[in-house]
Amino acid sequence: MKQPKEVLKTYFETGDKPTEQQFSDFIDSYHHVDSGIIVTNVVVDRLGNQVISLSNGSSFTIPKPSDHTDQNNTIRVVNLGVIRYSRSRLLPTEEDAIVDAINKLDPPLVVFDNEQIIFEFDLQTITAIDISDEILNENEPIMLTDEDIRS
Image 1 (cartoon, one colour):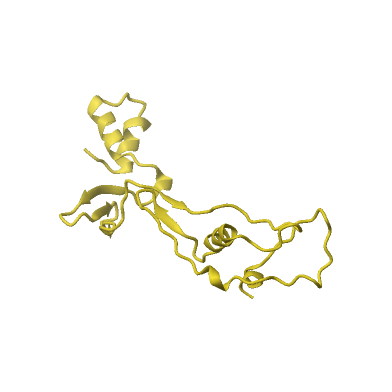
Image 2: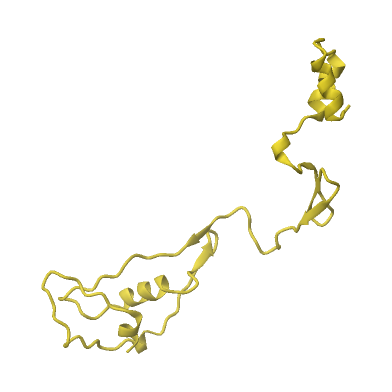
């Protein structure tokens, strides 16, 4: 049975050896002083919400996750790689443009592992890129922005 701290201290302050019951009371009453408020009970209600009771008498509820969330699958971010444009290939291919578009989605594209994804992009907006004003180094790749691709 739980006992106040003052009573528990008397078991050890007198120099006597505590009885089995006194030691049991000590264990039942123990929680770390630095813990402050502790969780005393966790119950799942009929709706699937978790009701958590605290040592100060208060409680709070954590709502059940929505039904469309599949907790047995992980979420992965789709990243198809980095596109680097070299001097010998100034225009992106259709595949490059698709990869670039997917990687730059904001927020990033996330899917559940069990979903099949079909991408549909309008590649007609990709036009030639004018880089005549830039000084090109033979070995240096050209990095293009979304604006370069869209213009």
